[in-house]
Length: 180
Image 1: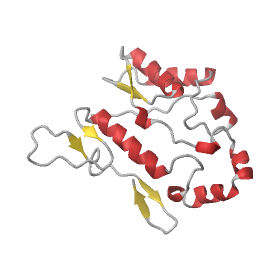
Image 2: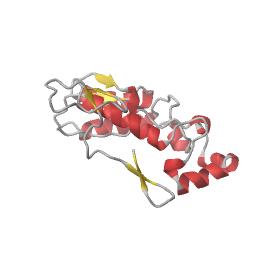
Image 3: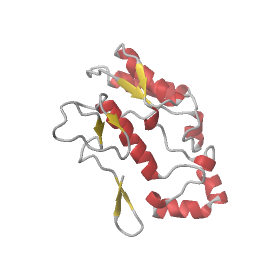
Image 4: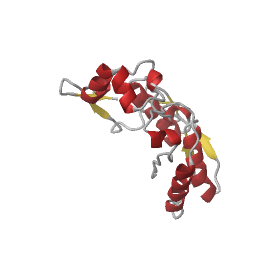
């Protein structure tokens, strides 16, 4: 199985340098062209399913790919963008002006940075891995903390991770890594 990850095309907030996170924005003209270019680049690939988060910009990008393969887009909410909380809509300069301590922490210790009113990177990673598990193994009910199927299960109904080797590590300030 091959999985292609395609980032959504541009929005007006991308071009303005604003944090958009979970703010539900549509693609602008540039983004629509980017989505079509991505779809064109995947025309020769054998694609059997196209998944997207529930956000408009992601769905529009996925729809461009799906059209070329005569598929419908399947929505998986757990693969949506990081929730930037109170920082949504702000530029980097605006965030630096109102939350300079956060910017330092984000740069130095991203795994430990609390986004005001938003998510931590570890939360996003767990959520996204759970969603990827549902995409790759649709017959399994994947969720954080689910027990792994036993070796005697003939029809496993739960899973712990997509694969034991599927780990993301985020550097910590203490020099170690946080597996998520």
